Length: 153
Image (cartoon, rainbow, N blue to C red; front, side, top):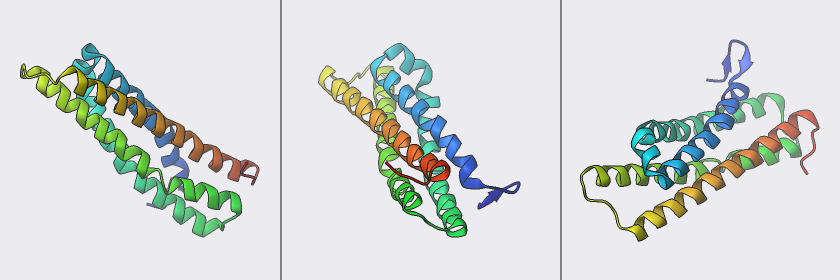
């Protein structure tokens, strides 16, 4: 998909990731740290994490299509380079969501994980969520600078 109703699809898809990645990160962290939230939100969180992972390569491919059409500048090249690494940040997020699902299922079956394992999962969830959110910001910042100023700082 390269365009949607005449607009470059990348422009539309990017806004989805800018919202969904931090939202998913916050939900994964919340579910990892708070059992009451986990029992209510674990499945929507896991589904959202999978959606984010699926949406990421679609968005980057649409961005590459757009770059081919408008040409590249150093600012766009930097944005493309960072965007190309986005998958490395959302895959750990989906892994963290899967670990939270395992935690939930074990607790439901009265076979809870030990405190040390829960702590490792929580630390991993926080790290994955923070890294994905910060990287989303970095990619978005370079993209907006490329569009509005043509300068990457």
